[in-house]
Length: 178
Image 1: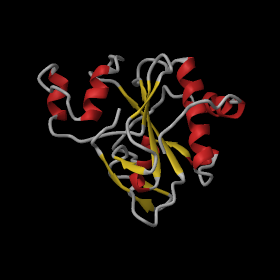
Image 2: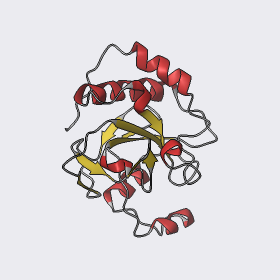
Image 3: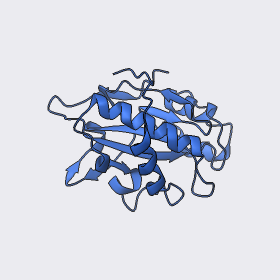
Image 4: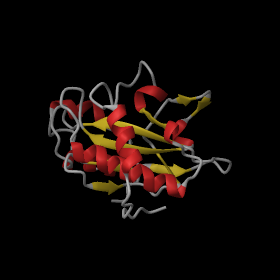
């Protein structure tokens, strides 16, 4: 699904970071239709009181991994998705310039699904094949690049479980638009 919310990366950008996020729209609900509409710029903000604050907000991610492990791509990897906002990693500002954004449908209350761990890990491995500067240690959470401003993927995301999944991935048959 080609999101209009993206831009060109700076010419000197080396893609070397993956930022993991969590999203649910409205809060606590895990259907993907509102998230898709939000990333496509077509969310009807009158449908739910919590959507009112999203009016005019332009956000996207490269991918969304839903609760069943299905992956939807919104922005080509060569483009700058608008996922991290005001962010810094290792002293470098504007993480959107040099990162890939992956949203997982979830929140701070419900555990992520086992299939989300597996499919997010597989997706990360595919992205890492395209961008060899991304190492395991350069897969971080939104809360790591925007501390105090963002919470996701949050306490519900088990990093040790994810890293084990990342280590055990063998089948890399995900096709992505670079």
